[in-house]
Length: 263
Image (cartoon, rainbow, N blue to C red; front, side, top):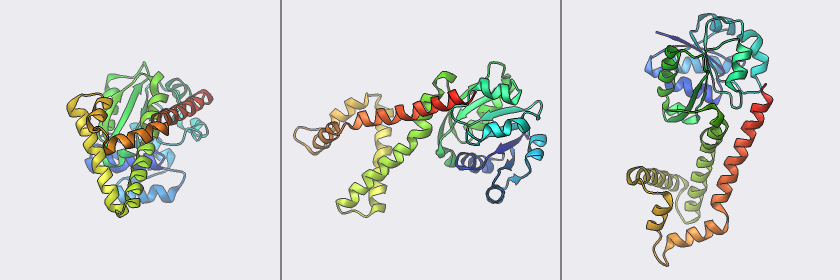
């Protein structure tokens, strides 16, 4: 059984561990500058919280789940680990930058989202040109243990970060807004949230099964002088789609800024 060493137990690191641990595919070692958080997650998931030196020595596959601005302070110690495979979740840190600073040709980037905690992440995956086939298989096994994998050219990672890794927050805000709208009309928040969550799942189901363009489905729902068209008119007047496009673009620009600064 392979040993995974996960460095960083914040939101994404914790989400990955919580999904990995019950599957018993790997032995999991954890390290975090916040030792209490690392110990608590280890106790919760049956993994082990260890020192960074121990983790670097014992783990076969190392997952970097720290914030991109933290990585430069760790490169000196991390690069001392030889013959290791590396997977990074850090937004904006390129494969070339990782390879140079880790002194390794066996590097991958992933961009999961917080749904990894329930095995539902949609995760981008890209490898350095020198990555071995065995490393690719192991990395894909790891990623599919907490959701779906989406192989991606690295030049689209910033766009994917914006459209999935960050935009899941937009989806949560959208659900919250609709639920509050339900409260305004007389539902409890809990009932309204249940209704809009189920409605979103219904919409995705229809989209996937029908194969129709979303606009065609909007047209099916909107009957002449009906209720749905009134909602659509207001959203169009408030630049709903344009606001969504701008929000993704803003996140993408920030990811690219991080990438420029990572070298």
